[in-house]
Length: 95
Image 1 (spheres, rainbow, N blue to C red):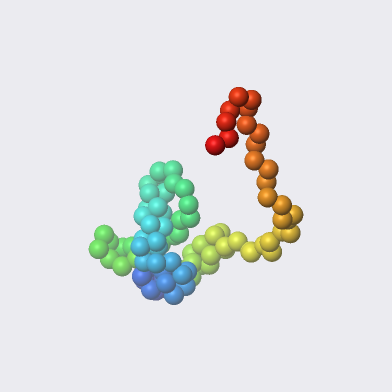
Image 2: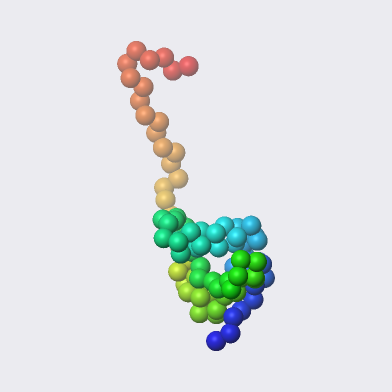
C-alpha cells in the first residue's frame, strides 16, 4: 500500500488536468478537510509536511476517477427548427 506519483506527475499523465487546474482541486480538497463547504471535485491525498510533496494512494485515485467520470451520451436527435422569438407587446416598435 505505497503511495503513488506526485501531484504534478498525476495532473497531466493520469487526469489530463493542467498543473494549475489540479492545484485548484487540491486546494478545494484542503478546504473540505477543514470543514468548509466547497463546490466541485475533491481528492484524497497525503502530505507529511507543509513543503513536502503531495502523494496519492492508488485507491484514492481510482475513487476520484469513479466519482468524477461521466459516460458520454449520444446526442439526441431534435427537430432542426429555429425557435420562434416571443411576440412583442402592442405599441412596441420592432427596430
